[in-house]
Image (cartoon, rainbow, N blue to C red):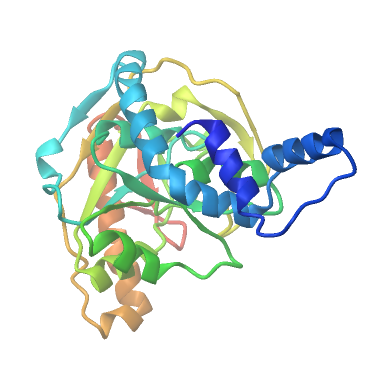
Amino acid sequence: MPLWKIRHFQYLMLKKPLYYKNPREAKLERAKQALYPPPALIYNTYEVAAMAFYEKFMKAMSPVIEKYHRLEVHGLENIPPAGEGFILAPNHSGWFGWDAVVVGSILKDRKVRWLSWSYEKEHPEWNRMVAAFDAILHNNERPFPYGEIVNGILKPGGIFGIFPEGNSNPMSKWYRLRPFFPGFIRVSAMAGAPIIPVSVSGLEEASPILWAKEEEREPIKHAVALPVVFPTKVIVRFGTPSMSGLDANGLQDREALRAAAEKIQIEVLRLLKNDRPEAYAENAAGKRIG
């Protein structure tokens, strides 16, 4: 969808009459609305345009990424057929979500709905960008959208993508797998959808985070990173699908959820060690596992 149509739709979505003293004032106001639309309009607008934008972007970027990163892919036979919903659970690599773009480009004919942290106050421009890809926004002020993911994506046969670590690594801790948050395990159990562990190697070096202020169970909000993507070789491995193994009672058992998440974490680590033997994982207590 052309950008001017998107902006025009935003203007129409104001749902109130606008009166101006002269044509110049009207033109300036329209330009202001186009450049800085209210947040609610952003999400409503991109919900309409995101599918077309995503498909065109991924199909255009797929051959570029394949050549630029000398992309090597293993395990595509583990991807369920169209119409069957499933969850992608990769390790988080690099910054600004390039890893999501790379994984999405491999499945360019099928849309992946990624979960993204919402920086409404700190970085509203980030929210605008990920809205264009129809990402699901979440933060401490937004409850985890279980219903939207289960009923809106997985049960209809879609693909849900999540980085269970929550954060990427600075250079000093490349290929460390942080503890996996268990929310994706609960989603899998609620939807009856399999989880596919995914390893991504090469992107830590492609878009390095030089320094980051890390806070416990919080996303990185302050970091120093290079605003480039280097042409490193990237290898992506899709593992064997697995179910959460939890019933309704298990959904309320934090220890069972944590153990199931750790099982997927170890499987991602196993895949990652094929290409990065130095990779390691930490559990919630900070101890190395796997």
